[in-house]
Image (cartoon, rainbow, N blue to C red; front, side, top):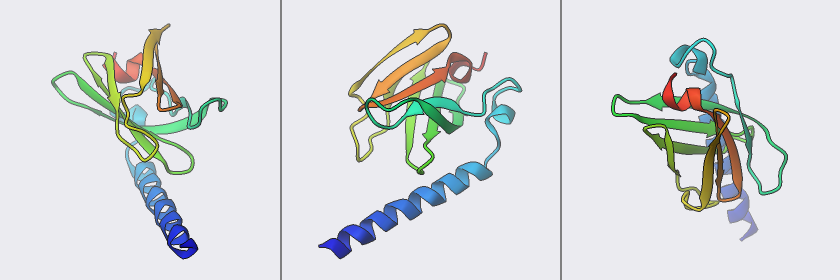
Length: 129
């Protein structure tokens, strides 16, 4: 049993590291959004944890939908889905379903809590303005 857990843990770590490497090779957020876009957003992975910094990838379509993929330092990723400037939900992960949360827009920042995690996403990333 311990071997199975160790192998699973190693696999999760390697997959996270691979995704983080791919994310680092992608265009910087500033080139895909605007020159004034931040290089990172404030985030915390565990309930009660002090906010740190996470990198992100941004995808926006012509229909008003935006996806912000947040990448934690340990390789864990979570996608945050927005439509017409409003937070809809987060992706399902092993830590939660992505709908157990709350959000508000305060002083131009989306304050999002999902499954014990916190994210502060500037509205300019969501809207492109």
